[in-house]
Image (cartoon, rainbow, N blue to C red; front, top):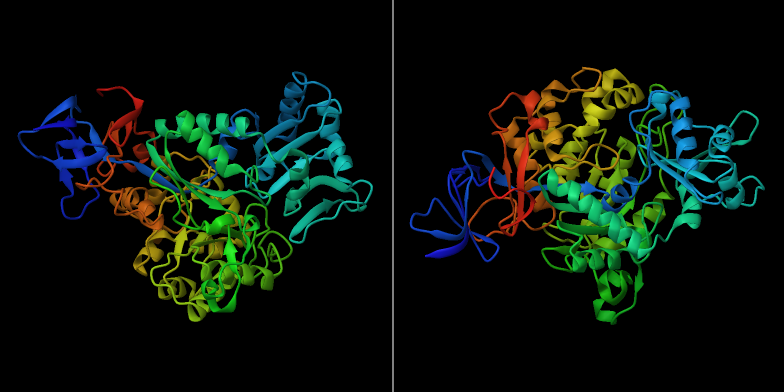
Length: 544
């Protein structure tokens, strides 16, 4: 019989335990029709010429719109001195009108010798307002014109709880704003125009497709310091309608975007008001191209910024970090969201924040049992004694970012002390406890190419050459599963995608090498030859 597409002469890694390998893939009506089925002819035929074919890659935690916007900002990654940063700001400022904002992203204070100072930014920008985002995205540095607009210099600014305006020894603001204090800057920039967001999503989609990504989860839309617009979902819909958005996306609204919903008394869980989006929209609404996922709530900050909530003081910094808001307020939000049918994604990096998340998730299940709800802890960066076992007992999924180990591993180890460095991003320990561990990047905080993430899972090398937690390394096959079937599972879509199984969506990638057999040093540089969604090519050439 004739089908839409047949790919022949491929080395197919199906990520399906029932049939792990094949050589021929048949696609019909956007789904996998058969593997190694003789007698099939394709309306389109591809000779893979021995290339490796794998399921499309997923990223369970990224910031797509922000990444797309950053592609047009001043790129501050990879700098080594503050002078380099000031020079880049000055160079961009010369191209802008006097009142225009200079926007930059990705600077690393540990690499350049500290956070930029507002006075130096004033000189570099010629008086133009400057907003620079730290690579962690938990810190923003601005200059004097911005502080003046915000009322910080006059003392009239109301700093949100869970935020810090950094001041020098004389009490003067330096220009650095931590965590929730970044909301002050959002009053000047947000909402971004829908047209700008659509363009950003188109730019991001092109990069994602070139890296083999076919599905991503956008972790934070609609509000808070991370949202780009209160109508951000509409921008995603517009991007999908125009064809700019080529990959599948699951969207996490931030908890700030949810509000009480008053339906019929019989619909109110445990006497609580409903908690969600207008019309009762909640986790699961949408289709396989664009769907509402969990609600996102920030419990703490960042290891790099030393704002994560820790049980013990940082090794190289005074204090134990802090929570993003009053614990009782955050507890109430999680309980309300759980009772109202939402999956919850709790951002918790420090072990003290993880304790809070686990306590509240346990309470939520006692009050309103929901089997297989798949709540998540985003990052789960520092897990102390007993915490992994609690996650497994409660069915809570950690969502770590393995590429952090390479890009900021040395900084994270310095933050918590090298005697605790083995507690960072404990992939193998999570698996040994029976947990699934989906792959993710937190892009643009770290490089988002899934193959780079897989290499870091296998090697656990830092950029300085250290191995963090050698017992936490996994094999390449496990890493591949993390970025395919496990990312589909945490999204609740394992029956739709994640493996090349007949009946599932025909999302796949052609690679230049078999990443499960090559030297681990080569995994991250393996060539992506082509990327397909529903049997249609979104990147690459017809034949390898």
